[in-house]
Image (tube, rainbow, N blue to C red; front, side, top):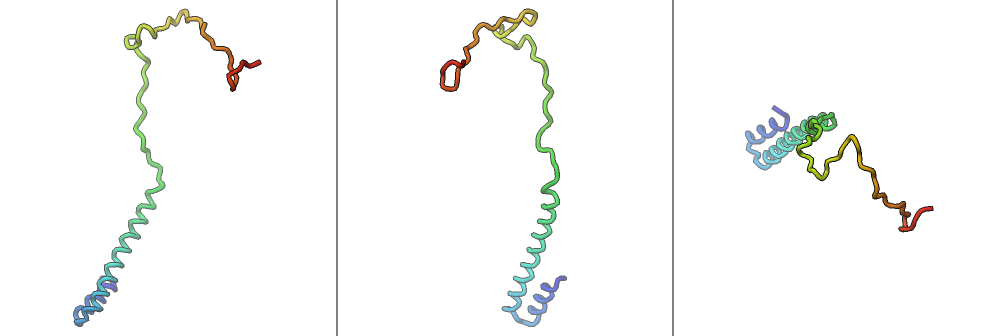
Length: 97
């Protein structure tokens, strides 16, 4: 039994109810403060430990030719020549020299 609790019990036994009320508040305040300190220590110990928060990355598979629309299919053996190349344009919209 803590010192605060013993003091409370003694005051109740002696009939000092006003002083017993203050002793009870002190005992309760001490118990709550002690519990909070213990929780702070526990939290501080786990706060900065490295933990994995993300799910494992899924495996990426190559796309199936069945899922590629016909207009997007490209013949790998003979790639198309790039003909629509825009001219170099400067920051202000003029041509670069």
